[in-house]
Image (cartoon, rainbow, N blue to C red):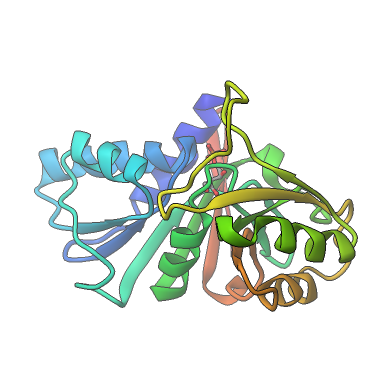
Length: 225
Ligand code: 5RP
């Protein structure tokens, strides 16, 4: 599996050109892209700046020698590279297993192009994974009730030790919402966005036109756009 992730990540890094400002997603696959970008910086003098989507991404970027900037400095990005949890044939995504979905959506929205790196297990005919929702802690119960009324089974995400909620880099909670098969992902994304206190959800349905998916395999990768 990690060979597939590495192949996808390394291929995505080749999409980055000198002078670009690059959105840096969060997750095990995109970290391979960052590793390769670090090599290109060290070996070829590639000059780029990265906008990290999480503290974890920022720490990785520093480790790989990628200079960092911010979305405030660069509200328009040349390209974003990120992972995903599921992708359907219309290039609609579910993201957020890494709890970075809010900043990831800001960065995806700001980018001219989004390159999504996955292994083949993430490609599905119909989205059916739990949809993570970043929720204001003040409103977690109220938001969970509203989401349950949409047909989900919302579960507050807890840390590995189950001793408390996961707190995002923005100080919020994550509620994972299983809807089963999602018949109309765009409509669901809009419904969740209309709930006060639901700050963002992991459905990314509006970006198909600018998304390129790189699907890593054990011995190479394929490109879908
Ligand atoms: C983080 C994400 C990740 O990109 C997604 O969970 C995929 O991660 P991985 O590449 O480790 O499978 O959305 O919020």
